[in-house]
Amino acid sequence: MGTLVSFHAHPDDESIGTAGTLAKAAALGHRVVLVFATRGELGEPVPGVLAEGEQLPVRRSAECHASARALGVARVEFLGYVDSGMMGEPSNDAPYCFWQAPVEHAAKRLALILEEEEADVLTTYDDNGGYGHPDHIQVHRVGARAGELAGVPVVAQNTTNRDWLLRGMKGLRADGGADFSLDIPDDPSFGKPESEITHRVEAVEYAETKRASMRAHASQMGPDHFMLTMPDPVFAMGLGTEFYIVDAQPNPATAPEIWTEVFEPLR
Image 1: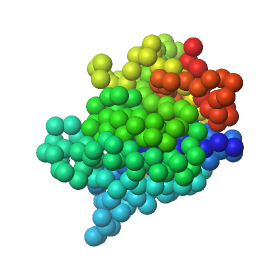
Image 2: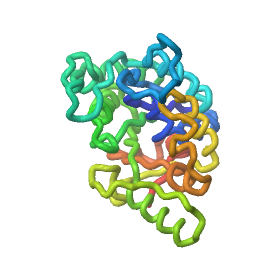
Image 3: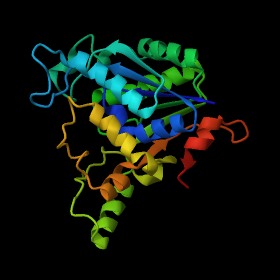
Image 4: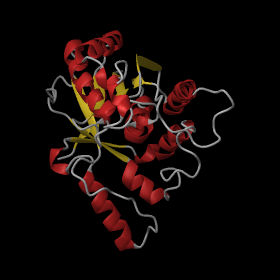
């Protein structure tokens, strides 16, 4: 049995980016741990979802544990930083937000968990945080350093495969099998081109588990959220395969079992 630690910026990020990977690893008998840098204090709640006096970060923390149960995650931890908000907002300057955290200090917090768990694989985000969110970029920086400090064999950067999505939508339209369209930004800061991506996790069979993880984050994803209303073929195409960039790949002869069982080379 191996251990995978998945590091995220905010509650619900794990549902969108890595839920299939986590569910697959857990189903195969591996230990899965979730770590969040913040409790998503600056998220916008679905109207009417919070009870009178209910605090959003408390609700979102509980939702993390509900998502973890759906995915088979064994442990959930928070590093204790505060949501920085979107890039360019005044909240980015708050001294206690994650964006302002010294990388070395934050990495040491994460490294303690990695060492406790004897992590075989750590998932983070690509160098632009998927789409330029400051907390996501900081997850990349802090995760990379924490992986070094703890000697984690594999650090896998979760990303969006732009080329895959564009091909998939084109194929669905050509087959006449979808009247639903994903709005894929024509923006080089969104995800990564396929040429930069090294690995994928095929997790289509865990699509319903992934949806359950998303539904657990009810303060952020109501029943009418576009990801929860996707037709099955679109959901499977867009979210059923998860992609990663691994800069330093382990020797195949000594690679952790969880790495070879869950991840596969893109080429």
